[in-house]
Image 1 (tube, rainbow, N blue to C red):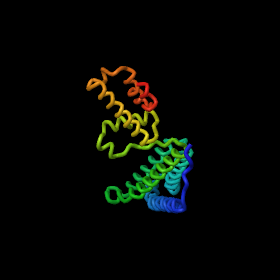
Image 2: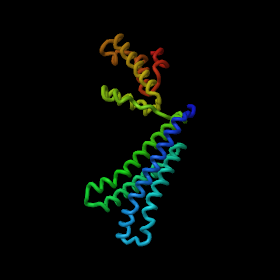
Image 3: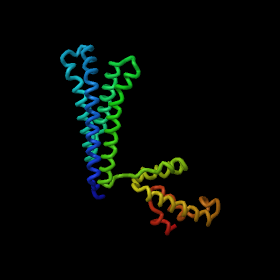
Image 4: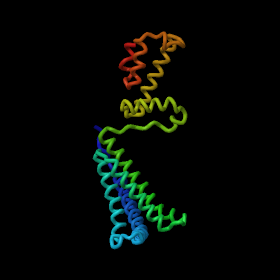
Length: 223
């Protein structure tokens, strides 16, 4: 298992700044939406409940997102929490937008703060999920964007092999792919252009096993 990540003093300061900023964004969003949602609830006949209705929605969003982050951290995520929180967030945006309708600028202004909050929470969830995977030695590295752009089809096959056989290291996968191409070039040099048909089964078997994540170093000698 990989060692836990060590946070420096600067990391802790940055985390504190980010958390404080997220709280400020959430507070501003709540303060800005409370009056609009309350007025809408009064118009819809909520009565005295209209005074606590906005608080219930915003508190529900915060609780669901906090619980989602906690479960992600301890590696037992429950996607319904996150999805429900975003549905409530979208509902809050819709309620605020209804107060400014049909002014498109007003609707957009009501949506800015919730969108900022969503992006901040998603970034935090991504970081927590990545740290949890690294700590538990479950993190799978991604394929470089430049490789996708320069060679999309072979890269897709490479990515597919990584996901199917739980190959976590990008460098390891690249090394396995290089070994496969070198072995394939040797077969072509030995048996000609029709090497797939002329080569014996023993020589082709390492290539077939390589599709399943078996290193050629373990099988090429027999081939």
